[in-house]
Length: 218
Image (cartoon, rainbow, N blue to C red):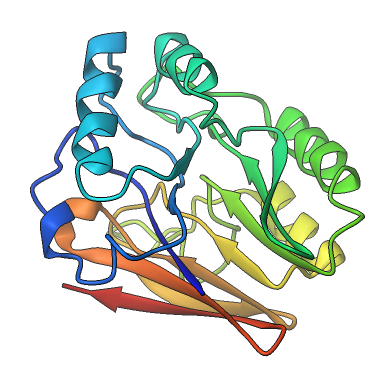
């Protein structure tokens, strides 16, 4: 069985029908930035577009999403922010959305200390799973996944420390559009597919009890 993950949709859904595996996935995992400071109507429009291809959606807000976005996901029982969901027997999905402060004053920003606390607390709730996929909107600092155009690393030190300590099976991230890449932190593959409009997505597969993840592009 497999799942498809992507993020940084920013209300642009044109690429959805080009993802060949999307309709057959066990679920679609959205890692954040569904809208552009969007309203309830904005998030509903995006989710309806995803549902037209695959109705099984698990999602969390990014820093560009408002409380209205989070409220809608909760109402639809799709929300994974600060939650752990079962993907398959023994396989969990943990989500932590939003981001640390940016220069742009976006709606979903929290202090680094808060993000680190959320990661530890949510991870504690995942203790019963043999395999764990973690969706974190902000990428780890000093990786291939958090570099802006000038080569500056702008990711989260708390996220990196969490991955180094917890070593989940797979980490899905995003937030930094220009850093589409795969990196390893210890034994954990960490993947940023970039903006959905750029065609990047992740396929997570469970086979013979083992989880794997691959960065793909349409």
